[in-house]
Image 1 (cartoon, rainbow, N blue to C red):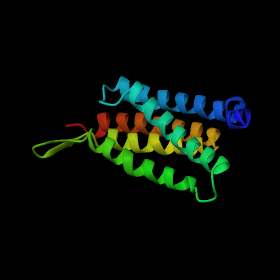
Image 2 (image 1 turned 180 degrees about the vertical axis):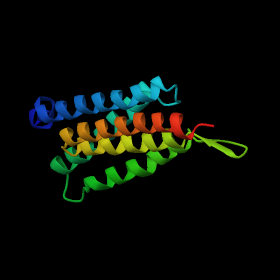
Image 3 (image 1 turned 90 degrees about the horizontal axis):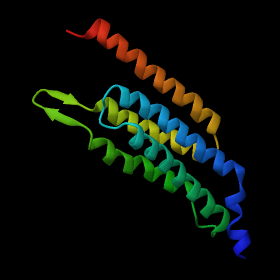
Image 4 (image 1 turned 90 degrees about the vertical axis):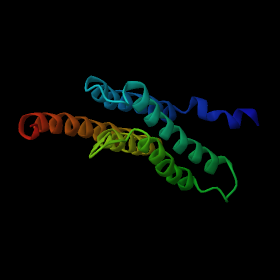
Length: 148
């Protein structure tokens, strides 16, 4: 009985998903870190990895639990929970609001983690690359054309 409950420890796809989540979180976090934003390497890596873990837990519970387990409910709660974390980085100072991009990046990192946890690590890597490129390109555009 113990062996059947621990088979996931030897499941290579789980380790690939977890490693991919770490790489994606580090990539997004690195971009935030070099721009001196509130949520950097550690935060984005933990968000991406945590979302992956939650989806994996749902998958494992559905595979080994009763038929009443719906793994999509756990994934849906990631969206709700990450909203609170994102709201914590938004700062309102007079007429200026700071942190919206970081909050959106937190939200997206969680989505990437959920995607990877659902079994799509390659898609997660591609989306991560797109997000980093968008953040870098938009940053350059803002500095060159939109700064006062």
